[in-house]
Length: 146
Image (cartoon, rainbow, N blue to C red; front, side, top):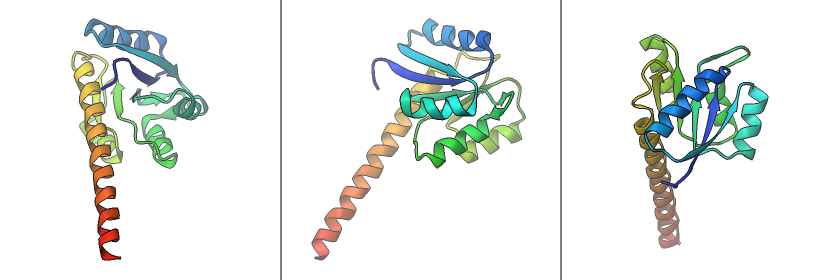
């Protein structure tokens, strides 16, 4: 894992973003973050900020976490996505995980956030390595068949 993570926060409440940041600082995590709260700013930050991980609140005035996940998929990004939100139903959390979120946490319990970030980033790195190895094997197999 990189020494300094780039974290994109999709969060409309400045106080909540500061609370999340303090939780990560307290754990000793080294990071830089960018907070956005609109679909346009989120889309722009994906390419210009190039985050290593996305922390997303679910409910924003004109945008939500499921829409953010769709934007990531449509643009072809494979960035760890963690839902960090207020109270949500288990059913909703499962829906988010099925749609591609890596994890979810409640804002009322951020103790697990640094570990969740580390796990999600590590998991994505392993997925990328496996995908690259599979692609390499496919190329080698095609060359053997020729």
